[in-house]
Length: 287
View 1 (tube, rainbow, N blue to C red):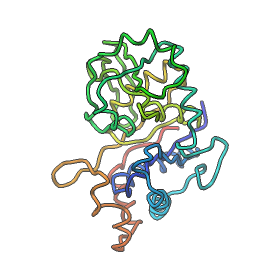
View 2: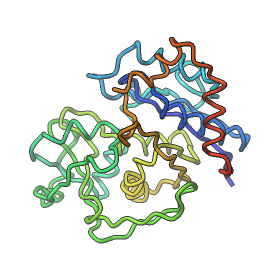
View 3: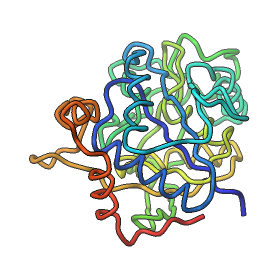
C-alpha cells in the first residue's frame, strides 16, 4: 500500500469561501489521520482571472483556520514546481501521449464553451459536444503541438465508468450519455482542467483526492484519461457542498462568506472547524 498523499488545490481566482474551507479542512484531517503527506498545489492556469493578491490570501486564510501542508510553492518539496503555471512541460508530455495513443482530436467548433474548459466544471454546466469534429482524429498525429486549435478526448460511447467514492459510495456514469467528448486543451494554448489535474496528481503521487461533490462526474472523465495514460488511480472522497439560503452552492461571489470577510469580522476559526467536525462526524479517514 502506498504512503498516503493528499492535496489542497485551490485556484486563485477569488477569495476562498466557507465551502472551500470545509473541503480543505477535511482533506487536511484525512491526511493527518493517515499520517501521510499533504501537498498544496496552486492551480493558477487561468492567467486572465488569477491575481497575486488571491494567491497570498489563499495561504493566509487557510493557515488562519489551522491548516498546514508538507509540500507547496511556499515550502518546496520533491515534486515541484507546485504552481500549475510553471508546469507546462508536464502537460505537453501528457498531450503528446494522448495524441500518439489516438485518444484526442483537434476541434475547430465554436469557442463559446472554451472558457469553461480551464476551470473545474461545477455540477452539470459543461456544454454537451455533438461530436462534429470526431473524424479529425485521423489527423491528430500531424500536429506537432496543440496550439491554434482546441483538443477533445474521444469518449468510448456507452462505456460504463464506475468508481467507489469514500463518502458517497459506488458511482456509475456512462460515457457518451452522461457526458460527451470533453476538452483537454484550449485553443489559446492552455491545458484544460481535466488534463492538468490528472497530470499533476500522477506526477505528485497523490493517492487520495478530496474535493467537492460537484466534481463527481468529472471524476468519470478523469478516470478515462488516467486509464488511457496508464496512470495509477487515486482514491476519491467527495465532500457535500455548502449551499446558501436559496439552496445554491457557494461560489466565490459570496463575499459575505469568504474567509477574508469572516476574518475581518472577528470570526473564531476554532469555532468554524468545530462546526466542520460536527458536520462530518462519523466519517473515517482511509489510508
